[in-house]
Picture (tube, rainbow, N blue to C red):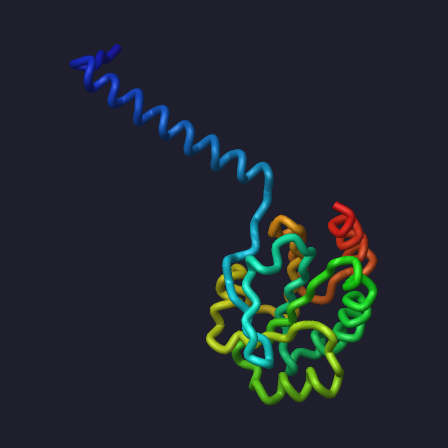
Amino acid sequence: MLEPSSPRKFRLFAIVAAAALIVLGVLFYQSLSGKTTIPDVTFTNLKGEKISAQSLRGKVVMVNFWATSCSTCVAEMPKMISTYNQYHNQGLEYVAVAMSYDPANYVLNYAETRQLPFQVALDVDGKLAQAFGEVKMTPTTFVIDKQGNILKRYLGEPSFDELHGILEKALKA
């Protein structure tokens, strides 16, 4: 058995070992809880108004990455509008984030002609998609609880029955 050459080295080793165990414990706990929080971002809507992630705390939020050129996005949009209309008065907020490659005038035209009732934001430089975990596929929808925890990430069109169940539970919490 190797013995430390001095009590000072032993104390230093013990402190480093304890710190390492604490860090590992915290990481292990976080992996078990499985909770990822909304990134600290600011959305800019079509009117140029800023919406910070912090301002959405205390609300259940859906963040939907989409594009006007995405046929699945266009097909799911009436159901997204219906979902928003159904739950907005209970506290649901919704931000539809147009991908960076989507021309702003196409997004504006789509939002106006479809009378989208929720916030529509532009991700001009792709930083929002990057902050949400390198979103590349559209549609990608995040459901976020009142504390800012991401409850669900949908790739493609969600199961709306499941989505509504998650929203109802989160809105009651």
